[in-house]
Image 1 (cartoon, one colour):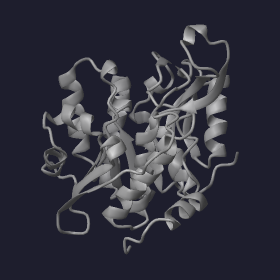
Image 2 (cartoon, helix red, strand yellow; image 1 turned 90 degrees about the vertical axis):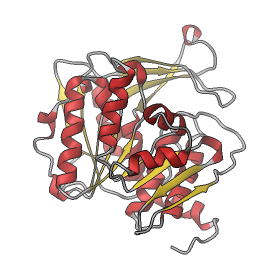
Image 3 (cartoon, one colour; image 1 turned 180 degrees about the vertical axis):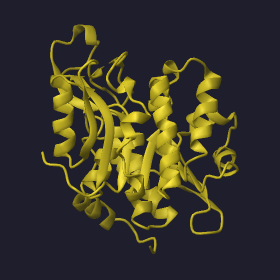
Image 4 (cartoon, rainbow, N blue to C red; image 1 turned 60 degrees about the vertical axis):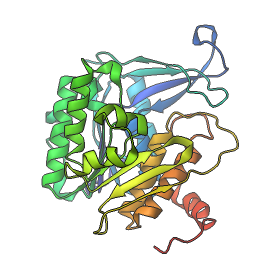
Amino acid sequence: MTQPTSSPEILAFGEAMTLFIADSPGDMADVEHFERRIAGADTNVAIGLARLGFRVGWLSRVGDDSFGTYIRRTLEAEGLDCRHLVADPEHPTGLMFKERATDGTDPRIEYFRRGSAASHLSPADAERVDFDAARHLHATGIPPAVSATCRELSWHMLEQARDGGASISFDPNLRPSLWASESEMRDTLNAMAGKADWVLPGLEEGRRLTGLETPHDIAGFYLDRGVKAVILKLGPEGSYYRGTLGGQEQSFTVPGFPVTEVIDTVGAGDGFAVGVVSALLDGLSPQSAVRRGNLIGAQAIQVVGDMEGLPSRARLNELEATLPSLGD
């Protein structure tokens, strides 16, 4: 696919993996057939924003192999600008296998990503990125956990985007097993969050990172470090906002949307990020942004797959048209 000539307005980076979802429930050791898709929290958000009509650039590495080709074709078909996606001839594309979810519980996942092409990302991969043209950067805590060079890239992306005047959203997306220690994870991600405008942790993530208990106090921890807004995911209960967007500080909780049948909870937080980030970039109020986050998060858990439930702009408009006006 021919890439557009204009630079993307939104930047995202990280590791995209080829995902294999079991065709039937049960232990993966007993499963004979899998369905191929793609996975990665960072790509989920990038795809979700692209489906809503934003011009999104994706920076990463994949292997110069069939799985890497599959990922590139899939991302380009979703409308992502992949000019900064490198095919690495020396390292393979990461793989991920997931059990078929049942009863709304989190499915078991196995990763094969050690030594992957994406784990060799570094600041050199961002040399040609036009940060002056970027309106927004979305970052997560996954790349800095993958390798030392990925961590260097994360810092580089945050600092360059901030210097270029772009807004920044940061989702901690904790992966404790990838870190050398709890303290290293906590200190690094809290420092990175302090570079962002909007921080989007889950409640348990916030407790683990700050040592504080309540949403109000967790949000205050990041607001004291210069963040403009903190939106905490509270699961089925909805989400909590505390911040200074629009001037005066305010805080509130927005209830979640009821879901009749939960199919697969993986990707719910990414859907939430798509909703919040897109609404704020659309110029909507914090209340509308949090509500949209809840709405898209609820859509994401009603389908199999990490990003299949993320709506198009037309579908989002249909969903939001049924909601009461908040006066935006």
